[in-house]
Length: 196
Image 1 (cartoon, one colour):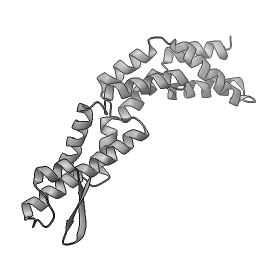
Image 2 (cartoon, helix red, strand yellow; image 1 turned 120 degrees about the horizontal axis):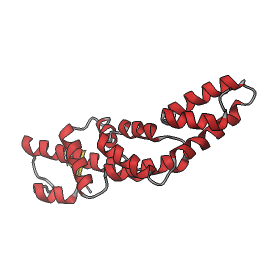
Image 3 (cartoon, rainbow, N blue to C red; image 1 turned 180 degrees about the vertical axis):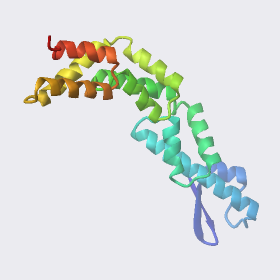
Image 4 (cartoon, rainbow, N blue to C red; image 1 turned 45 degrees about the vertical axis):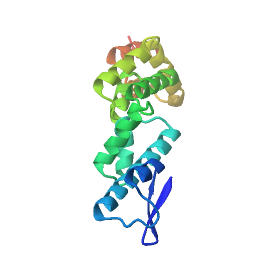
């Protein structure tokens, strides 16, 4: 990286390739068009470095990373160009991101399929990609057993409550966790059977 100075003041940081491409050198007087191009390329460098720093912390979807870049008050065309470049280089991959997030959610056993889909959509993952990721993550899992583990863990915190209240609260809890009505019914029958 190279710092560009105008009138003795540091104004932009560019890649060496940008400096060479623009023909910049010490003592060169910059016209307005060249100043504008320098500032555009400096924004691109800023966007690129920030995006890579964020991706170094954890994976992100294209939409999520785009939201983060927009907080830097960068030009939208620059944000899109950086996102496209990151995708082209394989640093940004919504399918892989969705797959990992769905597998982790199933592995930890805290969310059912519907809640995983919602979480993926909140991260900007398309319906098609989210559905595919959840389907693959759930392929080796038994949704009812997953819901049963979640229910048994939750029941420990409900000791002292009457049977009807535990059943009602557990039903609502499992629903918020994204399990289907049928699965919830089956799990409730196993852990808190209905009164005869």
